Amino acid sequence: MARADFYLKIDGIEGECEAKGFEKQIQIESWSFGVTNSGSAAIGTGLGTGKAHLQDFHFTVQNGKASPQLFLACCKGNHIKEAVLTCRKTGGDGRPYTYYKVIFNDLVISSFQTGSGGDSLPIEQISFNFTKITHEYYQQKPDGTVSLTNTVSYDVKAVEGAGA
Image (cartoon, rainbow, N blue to C red; front, side, top):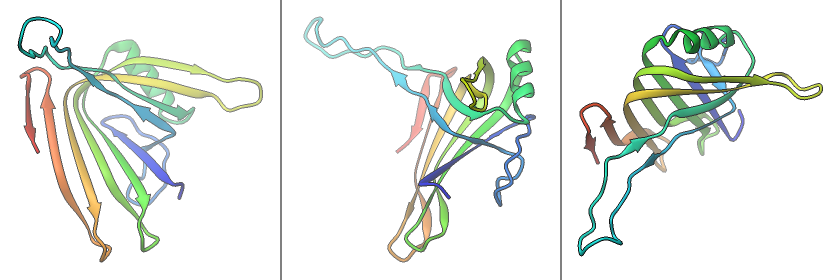
């Protein structure tokens, strides 16, 4: 296991991962997403805020079994019910455990880019847009047990968050 492993399960899209518990998921190399919110500290006497703008989830993966399906889903604008990102690392006992999970609901593949340089394998950069996101953080305790310690969610359509 690397320092951290990232697995992405997308409804209706099969990957070729063989790791126990993550079979047929997509093992990804890297990922990113974010949120922005404007403030008005420079105007007036208060500090107003704007509406949260959730950015697309971006991930990088080597070309594989899921590639044609992801490409077609982007071309057709398919609505996908759910995607789950699972992040794992090795604990103090030497065994891997899930420490962070992100669940995306009602998503659409918004971008599919592929390419290769020289003798390297093709790499794909893929993005999707979503309407709801849930973050789960799992903490390993000194005795080695792991438990869910924090969950938050945000619904873009309803413009409301929950948790923490």
